[in-house]
Image 1: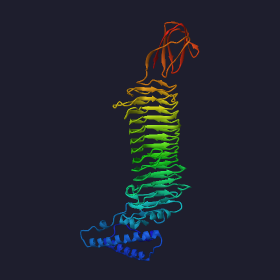
Image 2: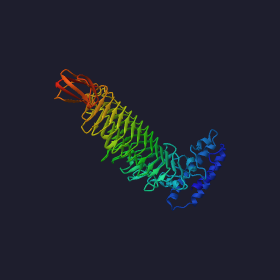
Image 3: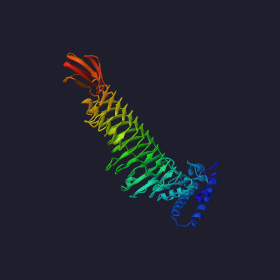
Image 4: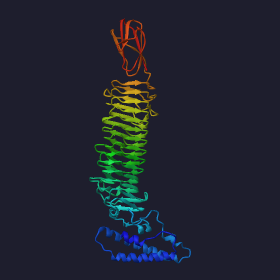
Length: 564
């Protein structure tokens, strides 16, 4: 059929404008040839049957155009060429190249006449797959014209294959009442072996959720692929994710400039975009919103990355999630930067189960019904959380079982409910919390600016934070062992207080903040620090956090502390 149509339409729409009478003659000649070919074609194969239906539709359209053409030709006011033929807006296949053009049943007349494959609106996956299969073994491009393609089975792409539409006017849609599992566009090696060099671009995928029962229905699912691109795809209305990479060995892939919206994820670990074992990849400049549903053993999210490594997530906009915005677990060496996340039902960014050596920076987070950034569980360590702006949250930044991380330069404020904190730590040790600005905001609900909540959070350093007016109870709460607290505006200086002097030799140890200790009066014979004598019997002595001095006396002195 592709050969027949290309022979019939050679030169159509090319060169100078023909005379109207020449156009009429050409249309009548084509009609005759088409009718002759139709009479000679037989059934048997599914593809041929579909092409026969499409050809009959083309003949009907052509007869209508001929009738209109003849009527307008007799009218002196008519602009015949403009009334009948619209110019193609897409490049058409040059014979011998690795491109196949597929038209939908409602594509333009000229587009349908020039396409290699013409769909009829029913089981259009047959023609789409045939176009893919007709590409050379080295790959090529399947170019979809504007129109709606209705499918009931997956389209499988091979190595170095591009499926490209004409924008969001090219729509691939799951048929009504499909009611079963389907991955609209997938790859031949999805079950094993994988593929490389796949491109899916410039089209719209419609899961047609309102006209299907709940099932595993997904837009793009690429498994075990490398060096592939999903770009400028609008994926919407799915009973699962819109775009996904699955399985192992998903390396050097890019997901960029897509819109994924209105997906319902009722299972665990699902998202509008789901990326499994996604390594050395880029997820950038996508818009994700409007997911619904609740996870069973883990929350759903707009973006989920599982087992990622050396991947950058940047410039994305995520909003209106029933649960989480970005959920990442069991991953390392990630950059999560410059994203905007708002209106999430729970956490904006949730990082869990051994997140290591990653940077979460310069994200804008607001209106979160959970935590702004949640670093959780299984010894998540050596991460940097910096430069983020987090407003209207529960806890701003929450560390649970996270060790040796750096929390720096974040702007946090306005907890939207009582009993929450700007920065909260539980069972998290040896973290550096430095240079953050925390405010409680106009609602006066934030409990503490920084809350080191339990003894299991030991050895943390809280340095140089701006905690002015950051908590309705206090700027800082420290229940951790060995915490160092220094130069925090709104908390330091802590102030002066007397020291109860014990029996000689009396050892005094500074608290979490640096202190100046004053010794006077009494009869003192020796004052030492670290076993070294000051050679003084009175005066002021500087101690860093948890440093000690020993005072030996025969009559007890008076001692004061000034905690900085």
